Image (cartoon, rainbow, N blue to C red):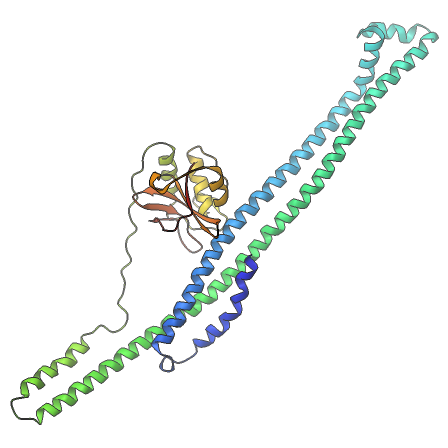
Length: 379
């Protein structure tokens, strides 16, 4: 599904080409439309990157599980072979002793050495012991064959899983390159837009000033009675000139404070997650102080509270109890999805706020809870 993500990559070139147009030749409206289109593509691409991160986590889980199964099967086969090797020598003696003397090694020794007449009987019991050993070896060979077939299947599945991991990494690299291109285009368009807005406002101010001066000259040629009108008109240029030129700067709001959570495991998980605020988002990451992705942060934080969760938003949703939005408590999880595919998870901390690892280029932070959640759960 991710291959279709880059079908629009060829559309970046035309967008880049538009940035070479002069601000004077491009209207403010058209620049706004182009900037909005690029911003929308960037938003879509960032959502795709989050989905890729979830797919990467799931592919890693499958590959790791298959590696463990292969190792377990090999260990089982080695153990069985060792057991047969160690028991091989004792098997004949035990079988002969059981048949000849009811388990008495002394009786077996006597029978074996008493006379030549004992030779047929001796050969019979040796044959019985040999048969038992052959059965054990045959059983081992059957087990070995079954394990080899299973190992071949698992190894093939593991190879396929590893290829999936590698392919997702490649898709992510392509997505990041496209996002970088679009961000560059967006920055250029925004620069052109700002210049066009300033030029437009300057032109409007100049036109207003010319109109005011024209009115003033016309008023000066009239009798004294209309002078007051001319005086009032003279105020227009000052009012126009007092307008701020360029976009009004916005003041970034301070991050909302963490809300105290209730006690128990949820509080411990919240405390652990909040201890990582300021740590960067890392694709596929789950290392405290170094970097996390969304499910990696949740997995690690709840691990500090003694609860084991998989490194996957989908896996976490599937493995915990589901609750309603009205039942949310600090430490509970909120999941987001696209088309029923869960790709993002955040941890609720109370007061309508959540702690989360969002996407590449951001730090772990506290944010308001986003709308449009797919579901809610409690580990």
